[in-house]
Structure formats: structure tokens, C-alpha cells
Image 1 (tube, rainbow, N blue to C red):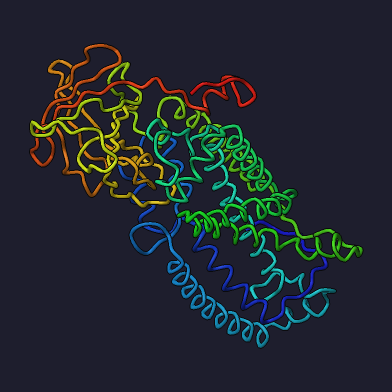
Image 2: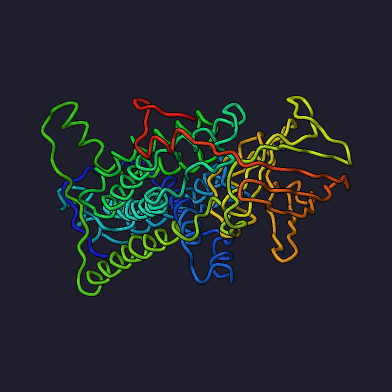
Length: 478
């Protein structure tokens, strides 16, 4: 540990030391990557070369004891470990103090001749706790900055909440759950999402420097407090993680909290903090080398990778291209099932109502039978196209299928995108008499024969018309 300069800080009371020991161990367990699953992923072949998705997932990994995301149960287990560790620390500290008092009169004289108890640097002195708190705060500053950079660049390039797909634009409002509505609402205003990402990146940079860390933590608590409440209100799946980041911010701000209250609320004279590290020789150079490496990798490299990914590999939607010049909304003009022609109906559970071809290899079909809901409400970043389920999550308005196209035989093989319905497949022959019609013929998963004629709808979307400058104050025909 580097040398430290310690000013006239109050001595730590016994109960403060005990509480700090619990906090110190608990937050080290939370902030440092001590979970074996982290290293299992890091050193697996799947993580190299590192894509922006890998960097994000590693940067946001938290210690967990079960499968799936972190829960409050994980917090309770870590707290129990921290309490046990603090008890051992307290016992060892008292034993060492007794040995020092009994066997070192020189140590006693040094303490008695010091103006403030906090100036002692032994393991039992207050100075060692000031130093330990300083290093805990450094770890949490960088950990929180890392989380903000990870999310900030996703928002900066409008990746976290993408613009709604054609299928979502043709799904009734009431067929989405609250979480999906929130995400879609953010996705239609990419400039606001960009602003949020910029704020997170600026806050991360403030946290990386000791003199501005408390300012960054104060603003972050207001910013992330809103995110946490939004997760609660909209049933978001990141409430545990957002609350964890808030606890980091509280610890960081606690260093200057009393001074802020005295100065701004009580309006009393307030002395500046006098505790600061002194780095000498190789430690001084090493500090700047590590900080520079952190900035280069998590700001420059990750930022560039995320920007490239936004253009070529947006993680919320599959990247496999669909059939050329086919994307759009199609009405079902003719639907023949097992030789029987089914007329258009608002109640028939078998007949298709409309079909959407996305630009990627997804077909969504609207019927009168509600789709099985993919109820994941967490923010997941996946590289594998099969695991990118954002388009089907939080909605029961449409049935989603990925398709593989044999353009030589004009054959489509559809597979239900819901993980629990992956066995549901359709084999369809397709033809395109003209640019506005698609004919599908084949068999369904239940071995029924179908013949479908699709007619493309030249539909205009208000969101896009407004973006083109044709807003509500102008004549607009839909």
C-alpha cells in the first residue's frame, strides 16, 4: 500500500470499526470478480476475440450463487460472509492490540505524543481504517464507472432500446406488457437515448478522478434513482443491479457527505478533506499507467467496438438477412386450410390475419390465438442470433418465426422463435408473382396443408412521417 497523508480526522470509535469491517468485506465481495463463473466465461473460447457484447457482459457481471441473474438472496449470502469475516477481523485486531500494548512501550509513547489518534498507521489505529476506506472507495469508483461506461455506450448508439420493428409497429398497444412499452417508448426517441448515454459516460469520467468523484456520485444517485424506480414501476428485470449501483454511489458519496450537509444545508464553515494518497516512484507511474489503460480499453476500444456493432451487429435483433425486397406488412387475401377456404374473421383461431416480413430472417404472423409470452424482462446482451429474443419478449400479439430460405428451390423452413416452442416448424414453398404479392404453400407443424396469398400493404407510419417533416400540423394521409 502506498504512503498516505492524514490530516486531523476524528478517531474511529469501536462500533464504527466493526461496522466498517462488515461494509468493507461486503462491498469487496460485491465489486470484485471473485465468482468462478466469471473466469469460466472469460477464459472460455467463446469470449475471444472480445466483441462489445463480451465486454459488456464481463463489465456487468456480479457475484451470484445460482443460475440466472443476481438476486437479493445473493446479497444476503454475501452479507453473512461479510459478518463472519468481520468477526474474525475484530478478534484478530483485539488480539494484536493486546500484544502491542503489553510488549511495545515505544508504540504507546508514539501514540501518546500524537495530536490526533487518527495519525497512527498501525493495524489497530484509525489511520489504517482511513486508508482502507480510501481504497474501498477507489475500487467502487472504478466499478461504478465501468458499469456506467458499459451501459452508456449502448445508449449512445441507440442499441439498448432500438427503434421498434415492423412487427411491433403493427401490434396493438394492449398486447405489450409494461416493460416492453417502456423500452419501445425509449426506442422511438433515439436522441433522448443518446442523451442518457452521454450523461452516463460523463458521470463515469467524473468518478475516475478523486477530486470530482463525489460530484459524479451525487448526480449519479439522482440519475440512477430514477432508473431504479422505473424498473419497479414497469416491472423491469434490472432492479437488483440498479439498486446495487446505488449502494456503490452511496459509499462513494459518504466520504464527503457530512461536509456537503454542513456547507449546503447547515451553511456552516466546512474544512476540506485532508486525507489523500502519496504515490512515489514506480507506484506513481503505475497509477497513471493503470488509469490510462482503463480509459483506453473501456472508453476508446469499447466505444469503437460498440459503434461498429451498432452498424453491423445490433444485439437486440438477429443479423441474418431475410429475403431481398420482401420486408413489409402483408394482408392475408386468401387462406386455404386442408382444402377449405377460410374467410376473413375476427374470431377464427386458425386463419391468419396479417403477416410481417422483417429485414432480417423473421416472419411474424397475427392470428386470433394469443401467442405464448416470452416473459423475460431483463436486459440481456447476446451474440448468438438464436438467443436474441427482444422482438418476441413482452408481447402476445404475434407469433414469431425465424426462417431459412432455399432460394434455388424457393423453400422456406420456419421455426418458432419462442424457446419453449422451438419444435414448431413449418415447411413452405414460396413464390412472388410480383413485388406486392407472396404465395406460400406447404404444411404446418400439425401436418395440415395450407395455401396462403399475401398482399403487401403500402402503410405509412406516423413516427416515420413525422421524422420526414410531415407532422401533425401538415396534411398527412395514412
